[in-house]
Image 1 (cartoon, rainbow, N blue to C red):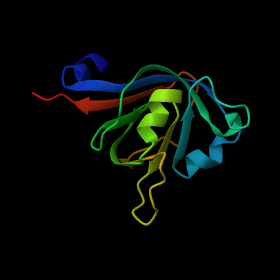
Image 2: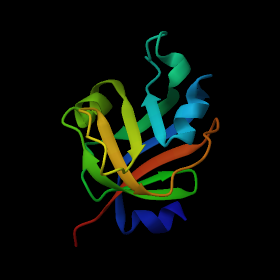
Image 3: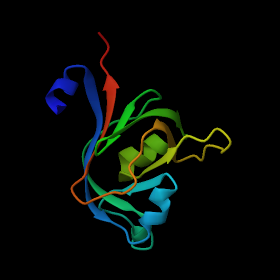
Length: 131
């Protein structure tokens, strides 16, 4: 399936989950996914989904997020979200809620998000290729 997607989409982010913090369950149930690279500070580690990043490029509104088999679309991006992603592989994904303000590190998405995260689960962000 990935091969057929790559004919139409460029990969903006590709990573794999290598560890899930003990305190992430409640956050995930609330639609909040805090990803961090392997250099996560120990004080934040219990709240984070640690991922090993293979590809990371700036995210745009309209990009497609895939976590496992769940798909959503990026609707808003905070002013430091891309900087955080590119420098320390830190990414905060939240379900879209127009009544909530956008924090500087947020990436808001509309669509399906998983109810849980597992080790070895793959995370992608795709962007439709310009033809």
